Length: 191
Image (tube, rainbow, N blue to C red; front, side, top):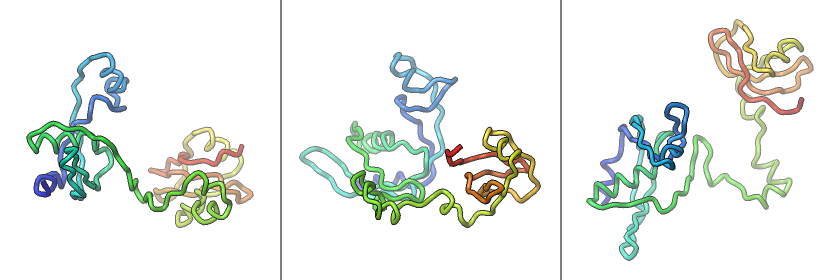
């Protein structure tokens, strides 16, 4: 079993399932699937960084495994591919996502914990604090209005992600500068 799982490590192509939200010609795949229509689905580049066997439950014919993978990987498809390589058929019974990017489930809090103020102060960070290492841009009233309305501003600075402030040094959000075009990315909804 472990040897078979090991064969899935590395870069590979994967065909997403018909019941997914990927769009083909402006329509989600699951919409085609519900209508019984077959469409050509292009394979995608994915990578399985690590895959390990957690346990095998012979009585229910279940395999429990952990996988660390690139974004865009469909675990449902991976499960079907594993079953196929085992000379069988299979499906994904359940999925427990333990990490997305830098966010891990071990750092998650429950709704009841959120209701306690001390948890908010300990566990939550502001967008401003999250981007504290990024450079800062202060916008005048005219440019700020354009920025908030999604208009790209012409700014001659190094490309990157910037914290955005108004003329009173109040944090507004985050913008992206690319080839002298500055556009909003994340804005605080307080206007």
